[in-house]
Length: 226
Ligand SMILES: Nc1ncnc2c1ncn2[C@@H]1O[C@H](COP(=O)(O)OP(=O)(O)OP(=O)(O)O)[C@@H](O)[C@H]1O
Ligand SMILES: [Mg+2]
Image 1 (spheres, helix red, strand yellow):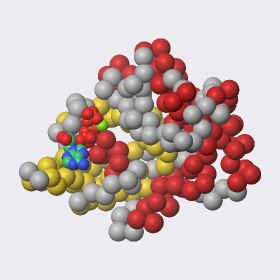
Image 2 (cartoon, helix red, strand yellow):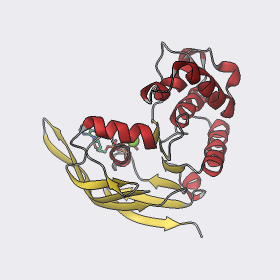
Image 3 (cartoon, rainbow, N blue to C red):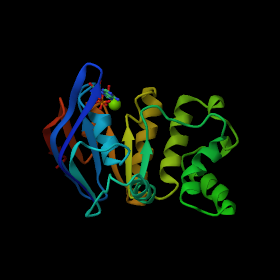
């Protein structure tokens, strides 16, 4: 499903170049639920952004479905992203002026789904995450857990093969977090979506199929649940 080969990434700042990912290679097979663990600043979000073709590595390659991603062409990367990948960000990144269903429908717009089909598909996905009765609410009229579910619905509405979730439960209380996780797990099973989830929570990570641990831009452990 997904392969990274010798990824290097540094950020250039006024103070010089900050190396973040160092010769990182990784293979993730389809339909699994994989957790990425590591301390703050270790490069988890950077890694997820590169997997999701939102950012380009300095060197190394990303293969999606066996094909190397062409970072040279932003349009090509966007096309591949729209076709294969759903994102749930560390901050939900909902558009405040749009209602819940309009936020969920956005990826359908990018995929050129006809207007008349967008609303029913968005509503069905909101229904799926238990928010059918909040479709006309704007983000500022929703609780944190509800915003998180809208973000999840938006990530899943275009039927991605790969869901990348950056601390999807980080801003939620423990009850809401555990509900969100149950939802993710159901989606993983029912839709066969491959999930890669960044989390600080080791207990939560241990419930996933696989735990990849990052420290200072390198993978220091990669374990699978028996
Ligand atoms: N745009 C940027 N410019 C310069 N440095 C950056 C930039 N983005 C991230 N960094 C640095 O890169 C390192 C890795 O950042 P990253 O966001 O990937 O960490 P993370 O593991 O996701 O941390 P957290 O758990 O706090 O979200 C950090 O030290 C950070 O300061
Ligand atoms: Mg992060």
